[in-house]
Length: 135
Length: 135
DNA sequence: TTTAAACAGGACTATTTTAGTCTTGTTTTA
DNA sequence: TAAAACAAGACTAAAATAGTCCTGTTTAAA
Ligand code: SF4
Ligand code: SF4
Image 1: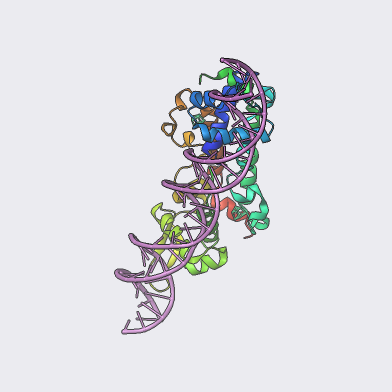
Image 2: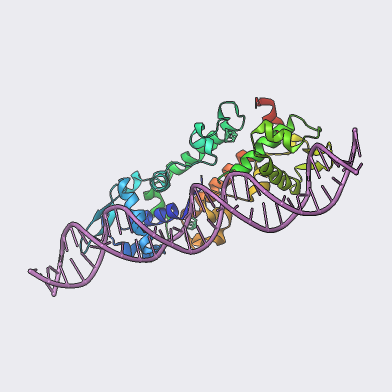
């Protein structure tokens, strides 16, 4: 499980939008507030759209807003919306990616770690995060 | 924390050597047994040498063997010997890698996840792994 | 009705990382 | 003294990462 800049930016921006829930916010505003390159952010928001996490309004005065209640969005789903499923080792993403997985002693350890990490990430919803937030 | 092929191979090979503790094993033998490209494995073993995990004997009949008791080698140290410290997000490797870390709400979550993962990996020593092993 | 602000989406690119290979040299034992 | 084995550095191809850019569409407001 490695979080790319793209996914990290996504989290920051969903957090920003959480604090402006139901207000339409432009890419430009989010980009400036969260220190994310504008054209890169535009791409990120497109993926969050496809995942149903944000919705967009086109045209002048358009922008983005959360498509769900912040308490129903967790860290894991934002990360997966951006970079797909991930884990610490390939066999924990899909055991077929290593032909040894069926008889490997280490394989179950990676699976267990993946489960633990995902459990932690699922626990963190954006309502909770926004309450603590100072960004 | 993402485990590269290099580190995964290292783990497999340390496990193989655990089952032949105190016997000098050639790169060629390990390479064939563990399905790791020979010249790549040679590089990996060099790093395990520097970390004090294995020792080498040069010349004909030379090879590698563990430099420590298998119960004193854990998964984390093998991984770190190969790829250095790693974590799920850059700020959990070194908080200075993100200028927001001081005021970021998400940062402590990555730190906590790193701690949990490292704890799991430290628990797994090679004596324990070799007992379960069928590779 | 036109214009400008904003999103949509695809193509493109530079840099870094990964996953190796290759070559030349040194050591050691049969 | 030759062959088998490690040592170490240079090299490379492919993939992933971190973006940019350009052309088009939508829509509110002047
Ligand atoms: S831990 Fe085992 S199953 Fe997983 S990638 Fe490594 S060798 Fe394959
Ligand atoms: S989680 Fe926060 S501190 Fe860590 S990299 Fe992301 S923005 Fe920076």
